[in-house]
Each structure stands twice: as structure tokens, then as C-alpha cells.
Image (cartoon, rainbow, N blue to C red):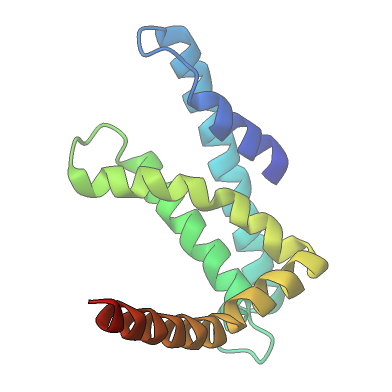
Length: 141
């Protein structure tokens, strides 16, 4: 379902603005995916508890990301007719839906976790490189 949703989001880019019937179909498909992912989140929360249990749904960081994406999608769906800049940000958050694939794939979860944990070390290397670059810039003048 996540792959189909990603394909649908990619195809939304190529729909002409004047084609109302295709946009209506696209919104219908979007409603289906929103309800499906909401149902998945509710069933996971009912099966494992929401917050208070030891293995609760919101105790796992990946599930927190899933829940945030689902809530943002539901807010976007319910406020579709409103023309505010804040709502545009919610529509942009729909692009985070493919990240839900990471929480269902253990090997991808390991790779992304390792990448996120390495940001601190990468930042330290960048600081050293900037200092060296600054020294050469000062000496070259």
C-alpha cells in the first residue's frame, strides 16, 4: 500500500490543473489511502496500547513518525477547502508518507538509524574542514 501511495503521489505531479475529473479521482484515491493508514494506526494502537503500556504504540519512535504523518494527512483531508498557508505545509507533509516504508522494513530501519546517528560525527568533520579552509583563506590573502 505504501508503494501504491508513493506512485499516486508521484503521478499527482503530472495531472493538469484543468482536468477536474482526474483531480476528483485523485482525491478519492487520497481519501482511501488516508482512511487505510488511519485504520492501520488505530489497529496498532488498540493491539499494543497507545501510550502507557511498556510496548505501546507511541513508545516506538518509528510509530511516532507514522502517527504524525497520519494525523497531518487527516488534517489536510479535513481542511481541503481552506486556503491558508499553514494548510499548504500540511499538504507538503504528504510527501513524508513514503517514509512509512522504513518502519515496516527492518533492514531499512537499521540503515536510516545508522545514518542519523552518524550526523554528529559528520558535523565534527565539517567543522574541522571549515577551520582548515578558513586558515588557507586567511593565509592566501
